[in-house]
Image (cartoon, rainbow, N blue to C red; front, side, top):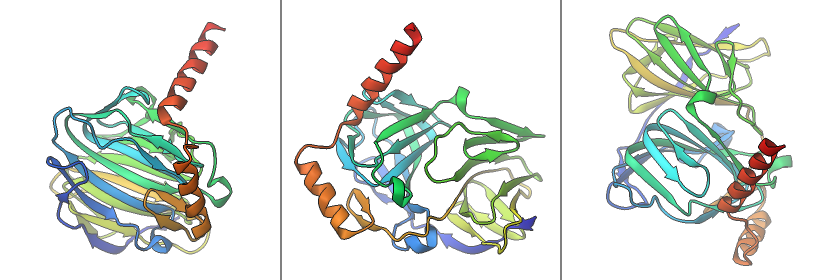
Length: 296
């Protein structure tokens, strides 16, 4: 078992005005400029919203990747796509061949969320769009002493999340009291990073503070690896993202990800022709199917 280290520390930029307008601050955790280095993670935004219950953006298209939205504080309500995502819950949205979503989304109270853009494998780039909400009862909770860990994707502490992944990914959130530790096992091939939400975390002698990201070393071989999170005199809350790099270059333009420039051109043409389904339509169809199965 190889112990992961911190290979590089990245200090996050200060919060800046977000696209929603007044009351929206954000910082790019991953800005999308060096996908070969961050693969399978394309972008990650840390969004802070204090906008009352007015809409969060509006309807917009996506294609060629997945979004993973993790609520760190507050709640997001979408009356079309599946109700409310509360603190500690997560939504996976597979854009695939193209979809329009975000039509009726509202913030509930002060909100902080992490939204990840995750690549799709080349063979699944244009898969059927859909979404999966993971609410609190479905999210495995691991307790080791006073340490608590929520498992949003992959496996931790012998518990596996029910997330339907296209790319193998481990996402956990750990809350550690002072002078504690938690060991997370990862395949040695995974690329990943740790991001303290509160406090600071130590990984193999390197301290990562709030406002920074620690990218993990990439061990050689196939014997498996371990990331050991430790706290000092203060508690910490930290998220860990790690996933299987896909090794395929991507082309990014606006809300679309493709393998070639022609892919992007084609997606824009399909969107303009009105060929993208709306996520609200998919949500209603999914709800209807569930009701029909319950009757049977």
